[in-house]
Length: 584
Image (cartoon, rainbow, N blue to C red; front, top):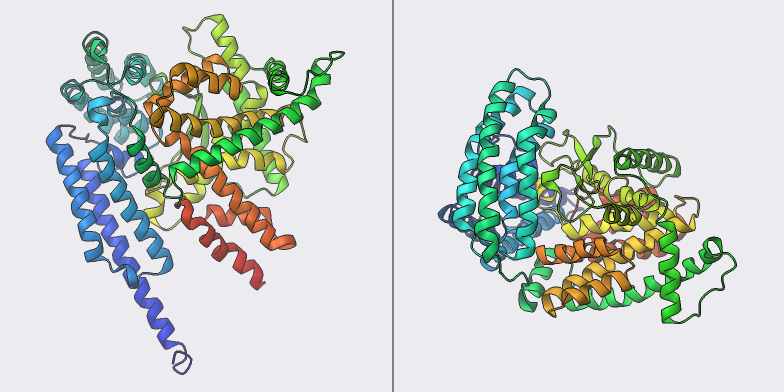
């Protein structure tokens, strides 16, 4: 019939789907408006600046109202939007939205960060101001004015923290105490460096002094009142862990499958590391016979070679400068090799990580927000803290040696997180830009580490390849650690043995990872789950297409859809890349 009427039926169906997609987008925008009115800091983080002069009401009644809003939205969604009438892209967006509501409601019921995680309040105390001063594209004077209003509200945030916090886990509170010290330093000195010259300086000094005084009192509360009763349970248990993993990954994979894959991959990567270490043995240990090829001998060879590699490293005062040099080298390779097309213009800025944001990781990428995509992105790097002794600083720098800094830069910035987020910000779907898949995001970054070396970065340098495998082994072991800490009551001693003996991490790095595993659940698994999905899709696509496969075009097909749940990615790539190449 469609052919008889010249495609009229097909055209009518497409128009109807377009209209239905528009209804979904309108409903989501209404949801955002109500969400941001109740949670202004979320709006700022995502790049909507309508509420920059406001801060969240963190009282229990306000938080209950927000959960009720989520439940009502979940109820209204199928009533307002007929999913059967949506285009395929619209149906994917609908499922992303529906899944996010389900996940948020589950978290509100099963997790209690406002009562158990004092770090939550640090975001309102420091990030609410820092983000406006560093990322907002509004005029500087407007951003400072909004900061001044927000700073007046920080005492209410502190009051809410004192009222809500009950019995946090010690490991979480310890980080919050250190971060609050950083927040005090920010308001006492660093904020003025960030702002620079401004006619609003006197007002800023007065407001900052009041906040710093308030935070010093808060520090006393954290250390003398809350710390003695910080005996909360950080393990969420097997049942919640399994539920949370499936909700957050949304990858069509269970916690048991993730764990089994990680155990198998753990053994494979260790074997590969030994093969490369054996090739480097003669370079670093001339005249010494290779140890016996058994478990003990293989581990000794890998660890000994890694120790030698670690001697080539930066210094605390040169670390950020060396990262900038690595960035230039990585970008030059990508541009010449055809790995993918880099964003233009480049809005990534390399900075030293602010003290109040430092926790248990060495670097992070704070990308341009999806609703303010022309803002600056930050690749932040943390030098070793100034109060560390010489031995601890040396261990840190050996872990993050010259080779590791290259891998870290690939992961965090080029072609990892920064590049991926710039592609995502160009996707027309606001749902995909805002409700992002963490496993897609982390998986892409981990995938690029090996993919770049496979494509020729480093000219076959074995030290760099061994370091990349060590960094990837972290992602594998992160997943094992995540599972065992929350589901199998793994002890700190057992965790340290896994990380130090099994994954060749320094003792200092391993201790930070143990702390991090207590401060989060499931997130540590996103790296491995996402990498496996990206890697398997790449292999399957390349095998199916043979000589017609083009790496840059494939990467574009993976990045253009935005960070969608991994279960949708094979279908999207087939549609957006494989089928189009076949038609040529």
